[in-house]
Structures are given as C-alpha cells and as structure tokens.
Image 1 (cartoon, rainbow, N blue to C red):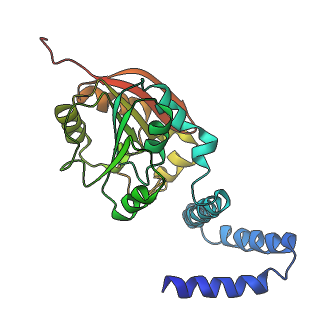
Image 2: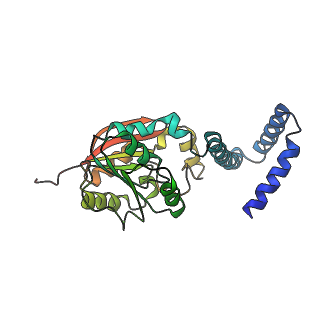
Image 3: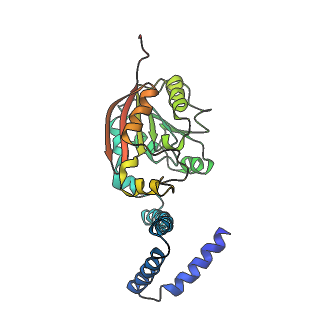
Length: 256
C-alpha cells in the first residue's frame, strides 16, 4: 500500500512540477489561508497544527534524504560532542535506546580505548546499527533495557532522547543504577519550554509532544524533580536546541 501511495505521489509530482515553484507555493499558501478561516479560531488552530505535524514529518524525511540517510540534526546540533566530552579515555559506556547507533558509534570512534555497548529494542533500528561500519570497540545488544543489559559495571550510561519514551521512568532509572552501577549518567531529553506553540497546543487539548511515542516532555523543574525522586544528582544542566542536556550521577543512599 505504501509503495502504491508513493507511486501516485510521484506521478502527481511530475505534473505538479510543471507549475513554477512560486506559483505552487502561492497555491498551497492560499489553501492554508482558506482552511484557517473555516470555523472558530480554536478549531482552525487544531487543524493547522495537524497540517504542521505532517509537514514536520515531510521535512524530516527530506532532510534525511538531503543528508544521505542520516538526520542532519546530528551534524548541526553537535549533541554527539556533549556525550563525547563527558566520557573519559578507557571508559566502559552503555548507550540505552541507541537507535541505529549514531551516538554510540561516535563515542566508540572518538573516545580512545573505550568499550561501548548499544542497547536497542526496535528490531529494524538494531539491524541498521549492526549492519553499519562499526569499530571493534562497539557492540550492540538487542532487547528491552528492562530485561536486557550488558554484564558488568558501566562507567557511563548514555540516555539520548530515551527517558521521554518510558512510562515508568523511576523504575527504569533504578534498574540502570542497580544493574550497571554507573559513575555518570548523561541525559538528553526534549524540553517542554522549547517554543510558545507547546503550551498553546496543551491549552487546545491536542498533542504537544514532538513524537507520538512520548509519555512526557519535561519542564526543567519536572526533570529535576524526577531525577531527585530517583536518587540521581544533577551535576550540570543546560537547555539548548529546545532540549535539556544534563550530566548526572547516582547519589549515595542516605546514611552512607
């Protein structure tokens, strides 16, 4: 079905491209303006936000095609550097929810004598990660981190856009600490306070998450409170690119 839809889109685009670009843009904008004037402002906003979400998906897909298969956010945001700069030579690193392995691969290539494990539960992404040109100090493990983690202690645990996908985040963080005993936890999550559209969408009672699989997108205070309740101490925190980047470590239990 998907291939048929793409074929139809391709056929229509061949005809549509005969219209000059500025004219096509004007037609599309005109249709959106008409759509925005139907019904009350709140109803129009809900419809327009749905269109915006679909447009964001198209932008992301075209951006990956432009970059040759990898999202340009990796290059432009340089968030790989945040992880690399906070990992020391020879560290044993576990990247949980590693996706197709981009961050784990960067760490393995750029932190000398490191041993890096990527854990991923999505089979397609796991297969993509293992099929890449990976260095010898990088291994991938398939499975849910609630069930599967590498044996032994980790110097550093990486959670890059992972916490927001987990419903029971307290249990997840406790399991990481109990099983891996990390000295450092590096966390990156999307921030609720990234732009004015987010609270407006919440007022309109439509999804304000940038991914349908998210359970939360944290305010800074929510993030700090969640980690405090998980007995994890934040050493440094900054907000950049609409995200929260934090360097943390498990706090010692009271009395120790």
